[in-house]
Amino acid sequence: MTPESSFHVDVLARELAVSVAPDRWTLRQGEPLYLTFQVRLVAGEPLILIEGGDYRNRLGRPESYELAAIDVERGRSLPIRDAGPQLGGVVSGRRLTGDRPFRRRLLLAHWVRFEAAGAHRIVIAKQLRCAEEPWSAESLRRPAAEIGVQVSTTLAVQPPDRAALGSVIDELGRQTLSADDTVWREAEQALATVEDSRVVSHYVRLLRHPGERPFVALKRLSRHGTDEALHALGQALASPAYRSYEVVLGLGANPHPGALELLWSFRRDEAANIRLAVLQGVFQRRPADCIERMRRFLDDPEPSVREEARRLVAELAG
Image (cartoon, rainbow, N blue to C red; front, side, top):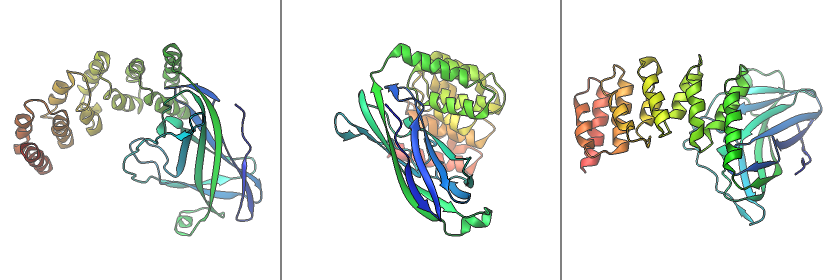
């Protein structure tokens, strides 16, 4: 595969060149891959691109980028993954100059999973929002100049290979330990899209590092039903500092047979949101004694937990 030419547009008396390129032109099914969407100022004075406000969803993908994937050999479009409700995000201005293009990294697996080997064409449509300098918070309240662009590239998708995927997992795991903030975050997001239990050991190792990484690792581990994952979750969640609503609730969907009792062990937690997560997690799992367990929350000291217990018990009884 070869790079494709840039798409040129004129906006606010400037000429922009827009392109997209993958980190590599060949990948195997199941492997994560980043694309780099780039906007370059070809002619004219510096410009502000208005970005953001589009990424708070289940997958964390920027919804202002519309991606389509076409299986060239079979002549059909692949289904786009559901990102769930869109809750916005922070909006910012990115200064565009002749020697400083704008680049946005897009994780392909956040949109699509390849169902077969063969050539696939990836098309990205984006509505560029542009503003004159100087940039300020006031600029957000003024109408922006908008222009639609569309760029594409073609990838060669190969059949899955377990050994090759293992090498990719290990390399991403190594990168999650990087001191570079961008490197570890990109690697972790890519690792999270890999549907393979071999990622678990890398997230367990990440628990031993300071800062934000243990919290990220716990969120990922709560989805994995291996003995190693559940043991690591139990050890970490023994400390109230590591308990969060999202991670505890995640135990409700964890496929490990022991996840229910780990979840249930937090039913008397001091934090109301953790007790709420236990209640909702039990409802999600639906054990044989589900109603009996949920009735215990009808006397919870927190009104919102009691009300949720009443609602869920009524729903099951009905």
